[in-house]
Amino acid sequence: MLGWAILIEGQWRVNRIKKVVSGLIVPFLSGCSASGRIGELPTIGRGAPSSQLVLIRVSNFVGAANSYYVALDGKDVFSIRSGQYTTLHIPEGEHFVAVKCFGGWSPTWKEDSKRFVAMQDQTNYFVISPNLSCAEIISVSEEDGRKKMAEGDFVSPETFSSK
Image 1: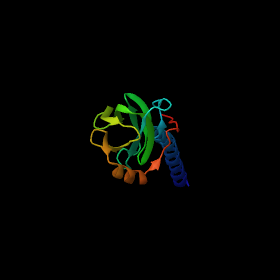
Image 2: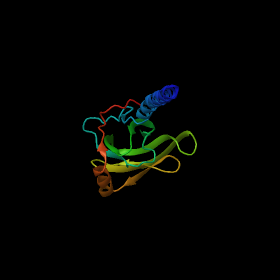
Image 3: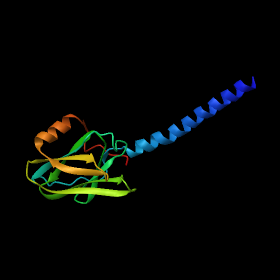
Image 4: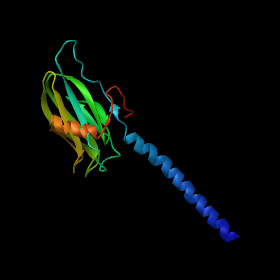
């Protein structure tokens, strides 16, 4: 009898530990994987020339639990998860788009950025993917961009992240 009691108590403890660990890990991972707007989007005056910026994060197991942060002209504007894309309207002119994340080989913030010129009624496509240091952002053609968009899930720029 005593053997069964010890076995049952041991199993109860294992189940309790699993519940506690799950209760701690799930919210942590969910917090890391929020997506949507995290800052103010650029304002475009009425009738002012504008362009469209498409940000596509490829679906990849590497870094899938983490959101990457996108900055436009030095200001954080969007948080994006693996397999998602969004579109932003931006004023024409020169811009810098960057992807930032925490981690990689050393636990620090990493950033990769690209300079581009947005022209009126033009769409600029950028693909975000993990790399050895954390993440990279590259400009792609409209054809490649549309293919990647077809594989992903759209996140509206009106959706706010719980960052």
